[in-house]
Image (cartoon, rainbow, N blue to C red; front, side, top):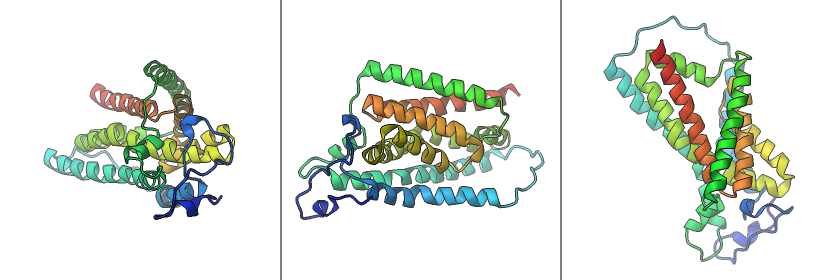
Length: 268
């Protein structure tokens, strides 16, 4: 769907917020439309989705034999490389949201207004706390049920890797706890979800954004849990009117997973 007000937001013209295609909650009101979000998804998520398809179509190699842990110096060098590369990949998710939020913010408003459009605004503390607690409870229950299916996920891969390259694994998990929650929440729930809510019913917008969130991680084994987490995060974004509670839940979820992975390694 082409944003009917795109021309009025070109540099040098008077910008105005486009009229939403359908009423949306105040906390999800944004001035960009589906055209901008489709560009953002195409340049950010689509390459990862194609990687997912290619990975599933290629023959899977046999599981490697157990190896000794890497020498500490080699593992540390690998950790630095992995941390920087992973952080850059996550930072790519910020490009489209920041570009369009800055471009479509009200004329004459400070740059921080763009961050507010992406949901970086104050929320009721108690509401945020309860949303995070309830959201994590829902994610935890789903995770316990999903574990009964014995499907291998990215957490299983990291648990195997940590015995071979512990420092590198910790670097990967550190990015997942710090950079990923901020970058991914601004993209999927700050940028994508509000635009979807303008063009379709809110429940459909939450579901579709959760599906795209799951696919973007390029891991079929983790697709259902990721979609479930995306669904919970979308509901929290809607109910809080802010991206901060979702960022907090995202970080808590990844942080608990990190503790479980490292604790299981120490136990063995």
